[in-house]
Amino acid sequence: MSELQLKDLYDGFRDPDVIKALAKTITEEAKNLKEPLKIMEVCGGHTHTIMKYGLKQLLPENIDFIHGPGCPVCIMPKERIDHAIALAQMENTILLTLGDMIRVPGSTSSLAVERANGCDIQALYSPLDAIKVALENPNKNVIFFAIGFETTTPMTAALLEQVEKRGITNLYFHINHVLVPPAVDAIMADGQAKINAFIGPAHVSVISGAKIYEPLPKMYAAPVVVSGFEPIDVLQSILMIVRQKNEDRCEMEIQYSRSVTLEGNTKAQEIIEKFMEPREHFRWRGIGDIPHSALGLREEYAAYDAEKSFADILPTEPIDDHKLCICGTILKGLAKPNDCKVFGTACTPNNPMGSCMVSSEGACNAYYRYGEI
Image 1 (spheres, rainbow, N blue to C red):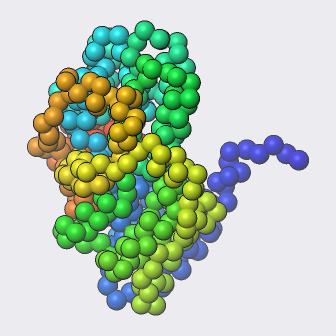
Image 2 (cartoon, helix red, strand yellow):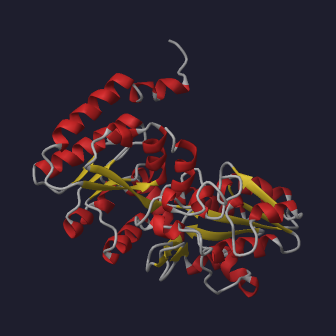
């Protein structure tokens, strides 16, 4: 038996003939749509697939994409970045976080700048690597700046479980885990974005289950199809949405059935529930405060909570984006990256003015990298 190669996992989902056939079918069936489709792909991973493989160019004009807030780096407000910077600047401290977060601008600096200035700031490949750092530096405060939607939250909870079991006392958590449904509700309740269908996040749904989207079709008369990330996945999901519309149906469906179930990963949900609970409020970059849209540590784990242990040095004032940056407007589905006056000029991936240009899931980053395709 031959050894499995990485390309074996995606080759079948990038077949040009299948992609063209799906696009042709969508184009034919979209002729029967009663109104143009305005599909929000909530997750930035879907945005990059759409842009990288030129899917928009394969589809008819009455199908358009609206980019959503499903990028955990993009939605982090400046004051939370300033928290990370303040923690990293403390003596005898090591700040740990995940890749893209290091380059996101705060109000006056970024973690990348502070690392260049001598702060000990490290990017992790896995949250569990934080244990090794803490054990190797017993005389330092090690702070894990945790980010992500429901996808990465179980890893943070699993890390805390191990820290508690092993009696590690110098590892703290700054929790910035956010939730998809409240953000979508906030955007739809605002009423400005013209959205009549959703491509649901894939990896989030593996953890939480597709059940979390069931209220959306009922509340907003917008079909939801949970999609995988490959180009054929996305096109199949669009075809499912078109057929729902043409059949006057409005339902939640799962295209990514090879990984997503209705109930999700119940063990992951249990470990999250054990250590975390919804916050009363959390401010999203450019969107504003969304109640119950993020998680924090439960009170019984307050000893591990960096926001409580180091509260006296953390800034509390909300800070808005640069006046020229329209990341917030993009995240709310009201603009596209090339509507921004500084897109591709003053703001590039190497010199980002806003968070949407930094992240590998950011819409601005996708347009910059693939916009000419």
